[in-house]
Amino acid sequence: MNTIIECNDITKTYKMQAKNGASNDVFMHALNNVSFTLNEGDRLGLVGLNGSGKSTLLKIIGGFIKPSCGSILIKKSVSSLSGFDSMLHPDLNAVENCKLQLQILGFKKDDLPSLIDEILIFSELTDFAFQPVKTFSSGMMLRLSFAIFSVTSPEILLLDEVFSAGDINFQRKVSLLMHQTFKNTPVIVMASHQLSEIQQYCNKCLILNKGEIQFFGTVLDALKFYQIQNKSVTKSLPENNILSIKKITSNKTVYKFGESIKIYVIYQKHVDKNIDLMINVRNAFGNILSDCIIYRQDYSAVYEKAGLYEIEAIIPNAILNTGLYYFDFDFGDGLNYISMVKDGLTIEVVPDVWEENKLWNLNPEYPIRVKMFWKKNEILNVN
Picture 1 (cartoon, rainbow, N blue to C red):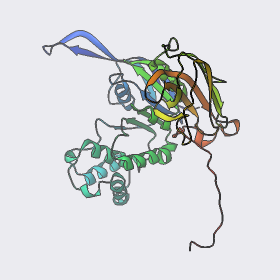
Picture 2 (picture 1 turned 90 degrees about the vertical axis):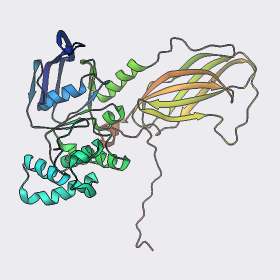
Picture 3 (picture 1 turned 180 degrees about the vertical axis):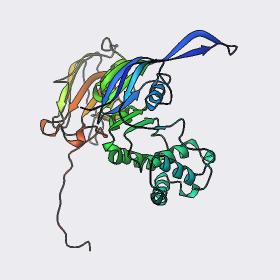
Picture 4 (picture 1 turned 45 degrees about the vertical axis):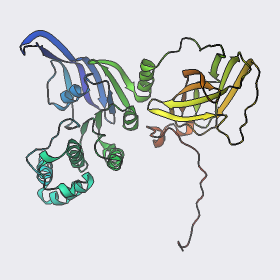
């Protein structure tokens, strides 16, 4: 593999200011001994809370600031796009900014008019082509900057919180650009607060906390790490005077996409009362699906005595796409919750052997992937 970026013990410190504005001898570590290597084809996602050092690291890779100590080796040219600052000149209008940036990037003069038209159409800013950029909103400036990148072929692309620009239609165009235009970019490094974006576009992930690396590895392993760090741990299954949950399990924790998922819940009912179970499934990005036996038109409550019960629930095969899923269990009587278990199960769905290296499994964007019924016929005309 060809190494493109190599960071060795990168540290960045800033001298803190006293209340009166004078400097003192207190230093803050924006980054502390950060080391990692990126090879050609890597797409690295940077994850961390505000102040974790993501933007500082991008600025060091981009050459905008120097590390306090450590070394960085970069073997290709770097292009940078940030959601917080812009490469655009505020006093120039959109057309003038396009012309300036394209000339800096080395495009021929004869090619500029058609490229500028393409950029304005992509950014949806044709009506503002001759307005000074300083009159643009931050979202408009970011859209114009991203559109300029859409006609280039960057070697190393740095993206800092850029996917929030524009409405949902523009975000779809950005997503398509990432998948099609930038798929051959040797290295991409992007910072985002959205784990869904990291999963969608990246194959590696670096989690920062107060300037230090908490994790560096594959996106899937990063999501597992992130979930463990932020998950609420239930030390014992809940009990009350109505119900005691004895056991929650499945027949295994890793399933192939084509397999059905079997879940078993054993509970003790202390009263003669009808109680039903709702199972909610989510991933690191939000809720996925929910079901309960009462979600049926023909459902009718059955009088049940106190006693020990087991529920078996089966998610049909070919429903959940590859990824990690977390199961919550809610017991209720139709009017009130009686008992709840968060993160009662964690299950991973992996691709079957024949499709392990297929494109759709590299970074699945959708948690639900059902096997539809398909039929294709040749027709002679549309009348």
